[in-house]
Length: 437
Image 1 (cartoon, rainbow, N blue to C red):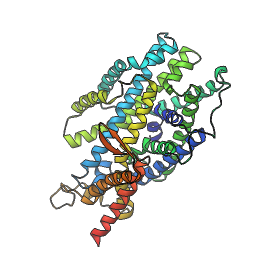
Image 2: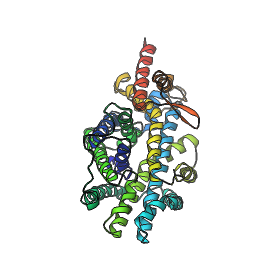
Image 3: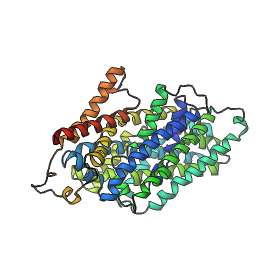
Image 4: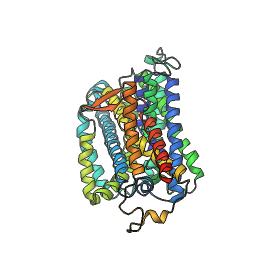
C-alpha cells in the first residue's frame, strides 16, 4: 500500500525541484535519503501504534489531545490532505491534457506552451468523474492503484535513459558532484525539508494505512522499500530528465516533448495520469472524507460535492508556466511542514516515551461521563502543539528569517518540520513530567 501511495508522477518533481535549487545529482540523492529516511523512521514509530493497537488515527489522537482536542490536529492533517488532493488532481489533469493533445497530433512545442491553458477544462472533467466514483465509495480501483505506480516508474526510468542517448543531449554534462550550492547552504537545507515534508504529511495518520498489516516487522522493510527507495530513485531520475531538458520543463512536459513516437508519448502520459489519479483517490480521499464526516457530521455525498468544489479552487490552474508549478509545489510543501511536525512530535513522544506503549484501547472508545476522554481537551498535547508553532516563530526571529503569505508572516526556517517536531515533542515530555511531579 505504501508503494502504491508514494510512487506517483509527483515523485519525479522532487528531482526537478532539486536541480532548480541548484543542487548536484549527488546532493539531490543525499538530501532525498535524509528526508525520506527520517520520514520512514517516524512512519515506523507511528505506524506501530496502528498495527499493535488496531486504532485509526482520529482515535489515536485522543491519547495525546483528548476527544475534543483531537479536532485541532485532525483539521491540520485534513487541510494538508485536501491541498495535496487538489494538487494531484491538477497534475493528473495536466497529464491527461497533454495526452489528448499528443493523440490529436499537436506539435510538441505547442503542447508544452499551451497545455496548461487547457488544463482547467480537463480538471473540471476529472473532478466530476472522481465525484461520480467517490459516490460509489471507491470500491473498484485497488489493483489499478497498485499497478499504476510501478508502470509510471518503469516507463519514466526507461524514458530518461532514452533521453540520455539522444544526439541533442550527447554533449550535455550532468552535474553529478559539483552543483551551484554548498552542502550547508540554504538551498540544500530547504531541499532536505521538501524531501521530508513531501511524505512527512502522512506520519500523523499512518496508522490508518498500517493497522491492517499482518506484522510489525513488515513496517520496517515496507517503509524502506515503499518510501525511501522509490523517493531516492525517483528524485535521481527526475533530476536527470529535467536537467537534460533545460530545467524549465516538468516531467510531464518532457514526455510530450521527447517521446520517440506519439503512441509512446500518449502511453507515458496515460501512466502519469493513472498513477497520480489513483494515489489521490486511495491515499487522500478516504481520510478527508472520514474526517469531514466525523467533524462536521455531513453525509458522504455532500462531502464529495464540497470537496470537488474546494479542490478546483485550491488547484494551481491559474499558473500558465511549468516552472511556476515547480515553485508553487516547493512553497506549499514548505508552508504546511511547520504545522505537521508538531503534531507528529506530540503523538510519537506520547506513545513511546510518556505511555511506554501501554494503552487501554477500550477506554479510547468510552465516551461516557466517567471516562477521561469524554469531550475532553488534553492541554498537554494542545499546548505543546502551540508551543511548537511559537518556537518556530522565536527561532525565525533569532535567525531573522520570515516570509509572507497573503501578508501573514510565517517562519522562514528551511527545516521547519524538524524544528516543530523537536520543540513540540520536548515540550510534551516536560509538560507530562511536570504534571506527574
